[in-house]
Image (cartoon, rainbow, N blue to C red):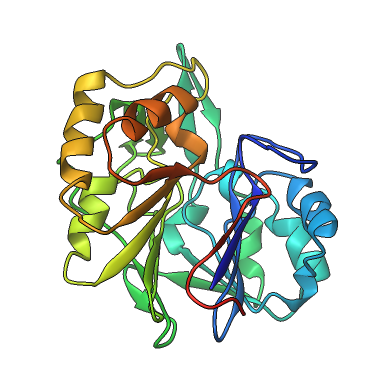
Length: 268
């Protein structure tokens, strides 16, 4: 399995960085994108990496925020075969509260008319290799940064967010922002023999750059260290300071920046 960050907040190479996420993943059976980022960045960076987006057969959009699915319209123009999986609620209106204002941060609902979209209502098995799951229970070590995010009905419950479990020789968990909380997400699939956990933890407010309290990070670090042998790679909305704090306390904590490629097991 190979995982390449095509859109991410930081870049250590010639690829463009932007607030958002898109991971290109090659498995034994699939060429897939986990999230698409907010704009044209995905397409520019894929070209630089020699990745042909017309060959993508599967897209997973983790949740209904623009920085994860804003490029969907452009993707549909160039790829006419990929199945695109998202929760049905992901196409409902979503907002971020900035000071006293609610700013729209959701996806374009017109995309639901595309025949390539597969709209889900909860957990879903794509095939024996790929499984999507939601996490309704979010109380344990929950990030207060989420309190600035809303739906039309009030505070966001993040039932529009799903995560990807990849089952191969080494099982891998892929998260987008991990709004439900990385600890809660891991507990949902605690019976799986996971070896890698990759994704954002939403520990930093993107508008104010304010990090969650260190006490929350300490609690998360304690829980993550219970997963002996796990390789943690975080990115995107975790934030640089929060990542560095966790890295100093979690046994195997790494950062996946734009352009980085992680090879798991045998290279395809």
